[in-house]
Image 1 (tube, rainbow, N blue to C red):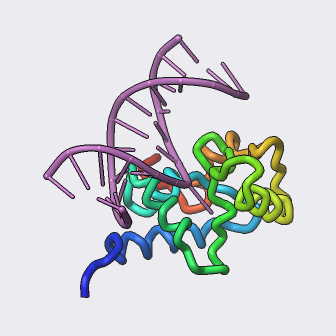
Image 2: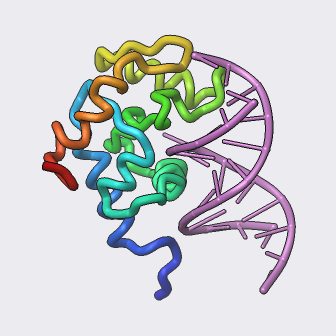
Length: 118
DNA sequence: GAAATGACGCGTT
DNA sequence: GAACGCGCCATTT
């Protein structure tokens, strides 16, 4: 049937990219989308996580570009994500993660390797 | 087919 | 750094 959701290949790439984020590290929606070969589809990544059914998917490592938790402060998802991040050694203050800045730039290159650079 | 919605991003103020 | 506004993408009503 029918292609109900977005292309399965795109979804697979996104999920694979998320899974590639190592323990204790964080990444942004747009970052994931870009690495998955879907620039500008940050929202698609969010939608995927919203409907994700995979408990093994490290969704808690995905944050906004500002390094902030995407959930509204005080909500269940917010607390859950913050709790999980801290459990991995990630410092979360006021719903904001303290570190992406230094790694954000290096992250995609450092973890997954040089993409459009050198 | 138009309008509304949402785990987003970026530039401005 | 926070608040605002506009743009972008995909699904739903």
